[in-house]
Image (cartoon, rainbow, N blue to C red; front, side, top):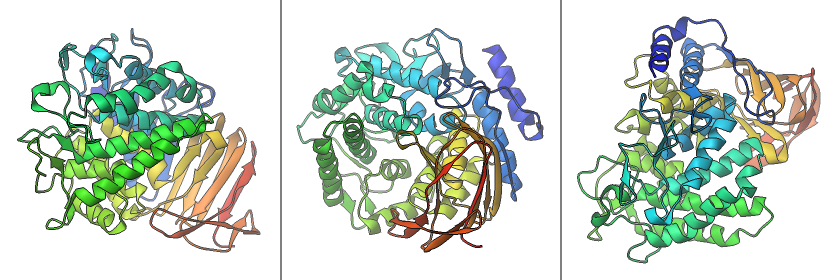
Length: 482
């Protein structure tokens, strides 16, 4: 631990001054090429250049390959030597781009394996490097800390990992399959004390099952809006997991849709022009705004009515109470095509003077937000398609990214003003899908005028794209202009 603290101090003091690379050995040939080098990013904005370098070094400082628990990275309070269900679920995208898929799989499997009837189908909220429940959170199966959105959050993360990596373990492994099935069945029934279909947290449960991820309420949260949203995400993940394994997932799609419709009908506060943040134990809805809960309601994709979604996105721009809540904001804004706000919040999370910026979630989320959000790099491993949809915004106009590892490929990518994308394939071959957030009939592919395909994004706007098979050592430029 002393060695880790020394490394963290070194990273905090001098990360912006470092120009050398670090060794990055992949865990799995399927998810990143052997000995993939550190990514290098150059743009017209120094805050982005410096911040991305810092985020990579800081995140890698938390990675450990040898421990009783197996490969893992810190995902919780620094120095605790643990990883937490909520944090891991949010850190997986950044970890993927850093070549840490085996670490993530190991940690998610540990959560899945420890689901237990004696804990009312909860797992361990937080696990130490010694492969034990973290003592501050766990005394016994009758007395432990647990936030009820966690099981669903982990389910969502598992399917997201399947899309990123194509690893069949997330679909076929009996440990994961049992976790999924119990979560959407026994777990829901166990924590639905009034049999209304929503999970809840009666006061007699104490800390053993909290009704929200929000932990600063002055009264008992019986059912948080974020818990409803997580349950929706869990049902949606279950449907997708079954479909990916060749089974029918329509039952869980219907359950998710029913939950979303019910939330829209019963949880909207017309006076506040916002959703109620939580349900009290006496059956009353809590009034007022709890930004941290609203952030997660949007993050989990629960809100379907467009005007209410936009109202929620406006509301959460006020920011949450702590760095953990705010680390989700860029994710949410990129998710809903509000690119400028996404990049504004990304910049805030990369601020050298951000309070508690060494919380692991900040650096991991930032890596994911730069690559998956700002640059729109979205691997779809089951279909062997790498989508790239640039979202350059908030003054970012040019970006060059070197040594991006995707599956068994390695490439460089260059972006210019959301109108031109160039990739150089150093290793591997795959289907590349460059997407532009506007409607055009043609794109120029290496100077050749090429008809486009069209699709409609989540905000109802038409996007244009082509799909290309790209090969090792070749260079490809796709542009909106000749």
